[in-house]
Image (cartoon, rainbow over all chains, first blue to last red):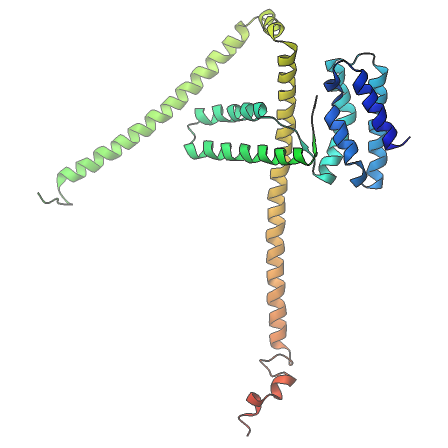
Length: 147
Length: 141
């Protein structure tokens, strides 16, 4: 089986599934897109993982939300760590998550009477982080659950 | 009226200002402490008072999309914080290694320079090309 076969199988699965986002479509597509940039040792492991992921997804009649999360954790997360180490992949993040992070970090800082500069720094760091992820997204080097 | 630096009025003014600063600081500290105390007392009571059924009911009112968005947000924040922590650690270690490397390079450059300075072929002791130059032979002529 080649990578092209794997991609075709995945496309067929996406077309047949009612909620295709449970199959993490863009994450898998990004992994396939950058597959040839990896080393030989990693390629074998990643191919097996993607094949296993597809096999499990095909076996399930209708993939539920929890099954999707389980499959992501057992097959795609180990693969993502390799892509992160070797090709500079990053976990996808959206503005809502950035906002939650700001509130989560801001409330304890407020209670501790932190000076205003700390809040400005927090905003700058989070903004830079978002821009970094955005640039990764344009390079197709992101992964994420239900993405 | 001319101001005198040593007048008793000025001293009391400084004392009052110091007292005000201290009082303000104490007030801020008390503000933080009281908020933390009240929060730490009230939060467990509020949490224990909420019945599990109402939490489930709250979730039930969420649409599938909103519930999935909350899961994805939670997951993204976990992965994102891990990623940021790793990058920060890499930055610190990378910075330390770069600083050490720069230091080592600087030392080696100094070492080479000192080596050149003490070798007989260096211009300080007089290299062959320097010895053959007109400037070296100026004195002997």
